Amino acid sequence: MIAAAPVAEALRVSALSVAYDGKLALDGAAAHVPAGSLTAIVGPNGAGKSTFLKAILGFEPSTGQVSAFGRPVAEVMDRIAYVPQRAAVDWGFPIRVIDTVLMGAYRRTGMLGRLTPGLRAEAQQALRRMGMEDFAQRQIGALSGGQQQRVFLARALMSRADLYLLDEPFAGVDAATEAAIVAVLQGLRDAGATILSVHHDLSTVPAYFDRVLLLNRKTIAEGPVRTHFTPDTLRAAYGAGLIMAEPG
Image (cartoon, rainbow, N blue to C red):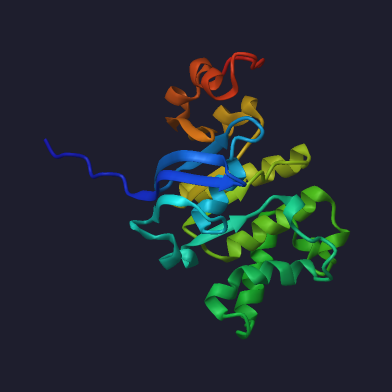
């Protein structure tokens, strides 16, 4: 019998800790994320979910070990795309939608690189995938919250990344935008990309994601949704007072 080939690992996090003013925001968190997967990062408010993504990228001082595709993250940043929370973005900056999306290609072009007709066509295609092609010439600050989120996803698509780290991409968006984002993320996964997304709506985890990372400063559980997203693991992450329909 021929043994199955091992699944490649896109991200490995071990003993990751972050402290603010002497208080641990992350306490030895760990994750082993296979390539070609779509993982929800869930946990209560203050659990360190956003901090987890920032520490992976080196945006927060941390201790522990992080590697992507078997190498230090700093060596493979050109393979990683990050979409921050909307609240962390200055939406008053005067820039058009199309120019925002083109910023996703800077690792290929350099900050002062020439924007070719091919890149502009690619940016239009990214907007088309997010249903935002008709807004290319608008100012980013003139859009609704959901529209802004779609544009930032389009910018991430321009990076042609292998690993996408998303911080609450569904926060404050309408149902149509949420459906559009889910379809794009699942399409990226099916094409071989790896996605980790902070997510708050527990009821949609089984429909949207194939894996889950339950986090509350420490890793509570990680693995396939069908085996690790259970009433027991949710109570361990959120406490006995959690009120929700039991996941299917």
